[in-house]
Length: 438
Image (cartoon, rainbow, N blue to C red; front, side, top):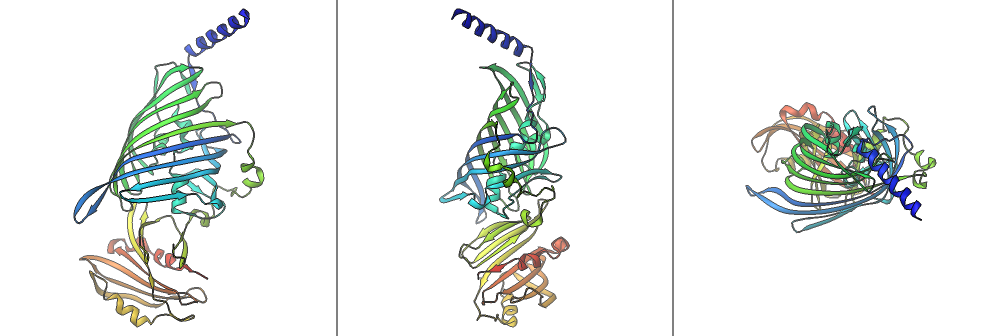
């Protein structure tokens, strides 16, 4: 028995001596690696919303839980992760904004998700079909596991030594679409129970959805030197985000607790027959990178490009804003219209007359008007006019769309005169995507 203890102590001393010489802090991933992730998020803070000419602070609380299996499908040029295939067992969130409460959950038919790096940033999509905006936020706005290898220096360090965290890793960890500047560093703290403990601290500024954000980061992680894996990470981040074209200003603190387990065997949820659904080419079919929207009343639905962001909704109205690389281009409002008899539609003259009653709208000239060709059984009338909206020079297009059963919606799209060329025909494409209930 004594010999066993002596051998054990000797082993520990040798191990400690080896670690004292330094530890290679590098998270090595390769295609075919599998992991299980458990991620918990809590958020507290306030949103700043302008009401009646004054800025109100509204209390914000949210939490989210994610549990998923992940397969590394491809490495990037720097030895990190370029593309993964995930199967979400759990993806849900709850939020309280003032007195309003909301819950979101990933649909059972969208649990298979691909996350990959592109020349324009991160892309998330489901091979099963278009995601909704809520579903996209659930799978794309938790901690970005693809950035984990980039958080480490990939070189040998001794306890107490530091390194600069790369800008790419900072950008993706903070969920920025673009990084302005970053001053983030890591430190190898100690070896405890055979595990390397490290910290990451610093500040960063970036752009998300056209809004500037400043963040401060304090994180602690655990690294298994034998397996060469980050196994745990607690990431605390305070955000000060300015108002953007599709989001209000906010000040929040987020705490993320991540646990990562390497899997020796391929899980059945990511077996070859499941992965066969994933496009082999990195160029994803356009339909899969669009989003889907279904009217809660069941009156219509449509699939639309991600450049359009839903910013408002009532029982009869849906408001979207078009962003082009974060720049606000146009605003669209979809409104349910009085129902006509099956196979018929409202009179174009009545529709045109209603346009003169739009508050704050002064028509200067009609650019075009008339029936627009569309699918069989549907009817579309369009009026494009130049004028002033609340004193500002704009171009507005008004559309009246009728379905075969007499269902109708109007779609008005407003764009500043100097940005009309950027809108191009995207308003017509949005209208033509609308499908009425059967």
